[in-house]
Length: 89
Image (cartoon, rainbow, N blue to C red; front, side):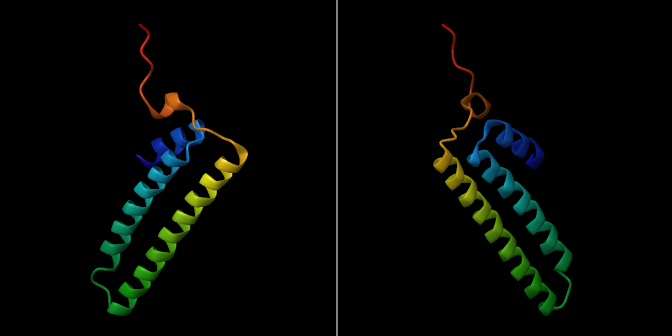
């Protein structure tokens, strides 16, 4: 799902889709890291938590910067990528 949303977000110039894609990636990576260090000593689990926190903070900073850039340059997302097709009555 990450790849699909990153592609759609890039094509639509949508910070919201990119943020959701990053959330998918972050969740998957965090679960993987958590499972990998589950049986390790507390010091390694603590280091994993610190890395996960820094990574999530970096993801959030990226989304904030992308949103600010879009707002400053007047970029608006492509609505057809993000929503249903308009009705043609």
